[in-house]
Image (cartoon, rainbow, N blue to C red; front, side, top):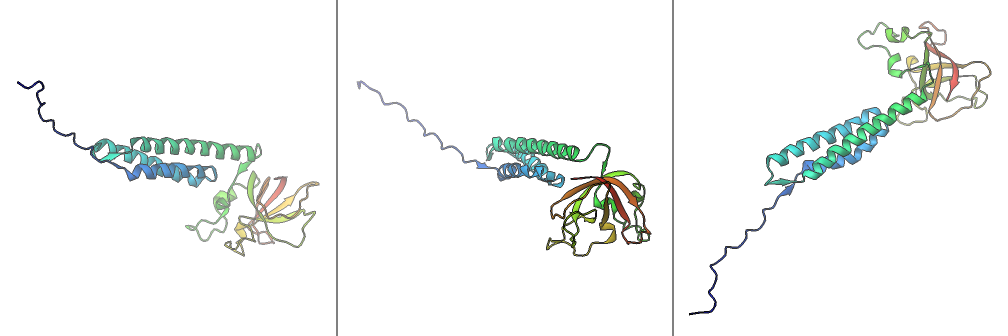
Length: 219
């Protein structure tokens, strides 16, 4: 009788099944990293929204097919990264706007001053007429001029005249005549500036520019 008895044959362990990393999870992480651009402007918040959407979609796909797809932690990372940078970016933009606009002034955009395409016979929109004599804050660029120093009056435009992609001749409603009050004066600059003062709306102004600001703050 043999001392040792051969054990019964053992079936080999099947190799682990390959699972692919869900490409949506990877795309979500990439968009999550790009979400830092939200700090630059409000409309860039679309980037983290896309990142969150991709992450949620990837999470669902992986949970529905765990034997085929992997990368659940990547999907969660994309969601949290997008959400965190979205909130942080919006918080920063809100803080920057609140701290930049002087207290008691309303921040306005050039779009508010433009004619309504639905009412071509109205050169000045009703929204602009309602802001006549209101204290406003607006940002823009000084229109190029010969006088470079000790400036008391200048034209503010939404874009820099030195920009090769900008319209060289802005429309009258895209210009604001800025009149510095008191002893205020400034020097010409190509940088973005902010002007706070009382807005005057006069469609019949002899200069052809319907908007003017009697400025008391210049930033």
